[in-house]
Image (cartoon, rainbow, N blue to C red; front, side, top):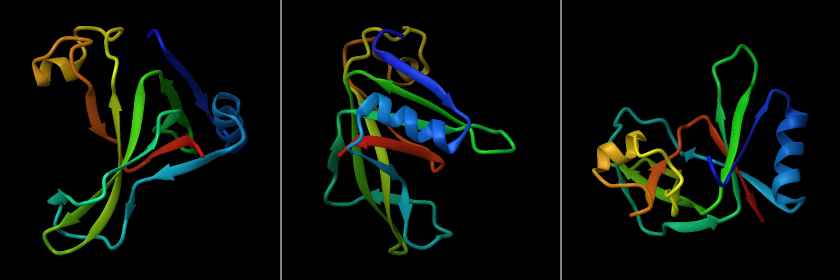
Length: 138
């Protein structure tokens, strides 16, 4: 896809070196955070949503016997840390991204079908999975 850089990190060294080669040495690694495990999966967005970066590399854990990550960076993506609170008071901080320019995406992308919109018309935002890690410029 135009504006996307991606790589597969199959070792810790590759994982770190690739983040540094794309974003430089002044970076930090972010992930989802949950205080205590909860049996209640229902969360509400709390106060204090904040932007944590516009220069990012998102790394999705792949299903392999050892740690392998599919990492990618898409131009025009903003990363957010979103405070969440469950009905039982459990607090979490979830990572979310907003893709602000989707004009290069396939019109058949599932996001457009679900939201009933066309590429390039609105930002597409979503939460990141629990095994996803995000490099951002510090």
